[in-house]
Amino acid sequence: MDSTMIFCEMEDMLLLPLYPMTIGYWEHQGEMSRPAGFPDYQLHQVLGGKGEVNIKGKSYIAEAGDIFCLYPDVPHSYTPLTREWELAWISFNGREAAQMLLYAGIRESGVGRLRAESILAPLEEMLTLSCGNELQDNMERSKLLYALLLDLKRSLLPDSNEDNELARMKPVLQYIELHLHRPLLLKELAEVASVSPQYLCRLFQRTVRERPVAYINKQRINRSKQLMFSSRGQRIYEIAQRAGFENVSYFCAVFKRITGMQPEEWRGLHGLD
Image 1 (cartoon, rainbow, N blue to C red):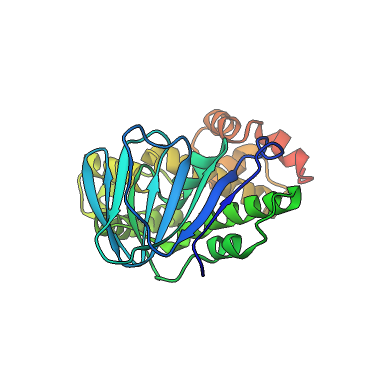
Image 2 (spheres, rainbow, N blue to C red):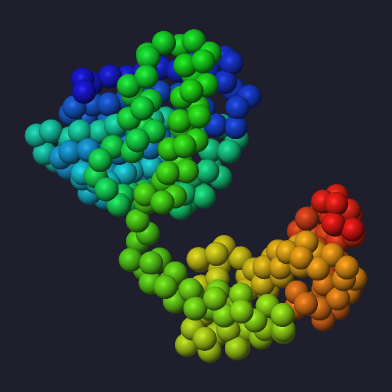
C-alpha cells in the first residue's frame, strides 16, 4: 500500500453521532510535535517498526501490534525510533466519540496493545475505498468508523493489572447472578473475592464502573423483566420478591429510575399484562 491521506467532506456529516475527518497511511511516519494538541480524536495503529509517543510529558514505546489514541487538545508528539515506522490512522469526531472510545476501554490518551498485529479490518477497508467525497462515500466511512470502535472492544488487550482485577471479579459476578433472589451483603461478596468490603467497592468501580448496589439493582431489574415474560400471571409484588427486592415500593422506584417507567407500564408496553 502506498502512503495516502483522505480528507473527508464534513458538510453533510456533522449531524451524525460519529464521523471521520481524515484517514491515512504512512509507509514511514516522520516526527510530529503538537504542543497544543489536535482538535479531533486520533487513533493510530502501528503496523511496523518502532516509535516513541509523548503525551503530556509521559513517554511510551509504540511498535507493531500497538495502537495509540490521542484525545482532542492534549499536548503530544511522536517520532520514529527505527528506519521505518509504518502507521495507519484515522482522526474523527462526533457527539458519541468519547462514549464509543470508553466502550472500547479507552478512557484517555495513551498506548494500548492489540491481540493481533494485522491492520484492523474496518480501517483497512476505509483506506481501500474510493477517495471520492460523495455523500455515499462518507456515509460508508462513518459506518466503518463505528465498526472500528466496536472491534476495538474485543481487539484491545487489557493491561495486566486490569486483567487481574477482572479475573478476581468474575466469581463475584457469578455469585451475584446465582443469589439475586435473596439479600446480598457487601461483606458476603467481599468474602467471595477474599478482599475487604472497601477494596471490593474499588474493584467494582474500576471493572464494571458502578457501585455494587447499583450493579445488583440493575441485574435484579433485568431478572424482573424476564420474570414478567415467563410468569405473566404473577402480581408485581411477587415479581419483586422473586427478583430479590424485599420491598415492592423500592422495587418500583428502582425500576422507574432505570427504565423510565413503572413495572406495570413496562409490562403493558410489551404486551405482557
